[in-house]
Length: 118
Image 1 (cartoon, rainbow, N blue to C red):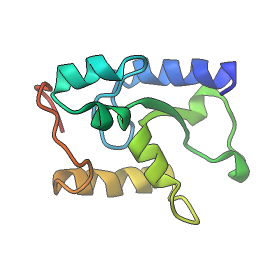
Image 2: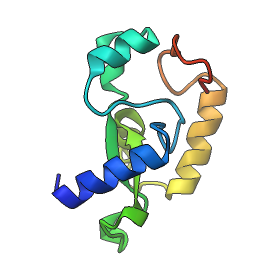
Image 3: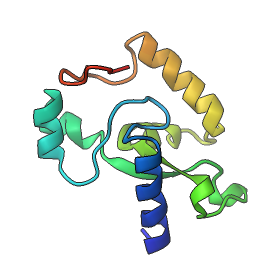
């Protein structure tokens, strides 16, 4: 990851108060072990919550590496958005994820230590 994308990801992480732009679950930057302990999940589950840089408009569609086009997304949401042949636009994907979260069908676990979890 280039240095500019890493900076944009860090900026997005703090701007979003450490929550994924799609599922609103808290993420981590450096320590899956601390995350697992804090939120009562397994190490494997914590790995899914690592903060990644997400291009809101893909580079192949004319998007840039500017901070205004980078959001912080958990690894799971980022990977799932790009599994299909065509990724949904970011807002449409957020709407889909939010509906699945409300139904309990998105993350395979619930976070135990988060008072204001989704």
